[in-house]
Image 1 (cartoon, rainbow, N blue to C red):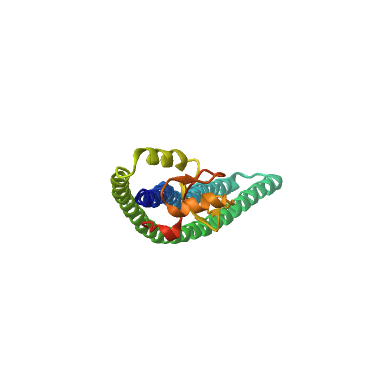
Image 2: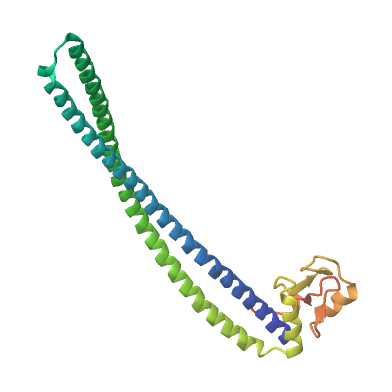
Length: 240
């Protein structure tokens, strides 16, 4: 029975390794997804800055047309001067010309502001593209490492699960069934050490006679409180 307990302890260690690798494998795709989100965020930032640049350029083109039309309007108004007959008409014409010229001046100010915005947006695009290129390079390196880790974990899982199958075949069927039935409920910690007349799984005291019997390692004994399988460390050399 000591050999069977030894095999069972080793099986539990393997199951722990399998759980750890499966948890690692579960997290790796999440990390990959996070990298993709970072990459998409970089692209979105560049798109935002480009849209701002395009909007400023479009606005400038529109205001350039407005200014051209305003200039033409001033020239048209001035061309009417020879047709003026009275001082009142002349004063009204000058007022109209002044109003259009003031509008044109406001348009020129808008154009200057738009030109400044275009220059600023162009600088932002350059910086954003430079930063994005550096981040994309880092993301690509991280993505490659994660993909390699996934492949490594997959290979390790295959090897460990094969080892488990071979080991499980060496354990008595009733004992293996008892272990596997309790494994899920006890979070994988089914076989635990008994020491100082207590169970190291639930930390409850066990009857003195049970502790004496466990120390012999001649039969499968369980904790009366948590139902874990007990073994005595000094009388067994568990494989790690």
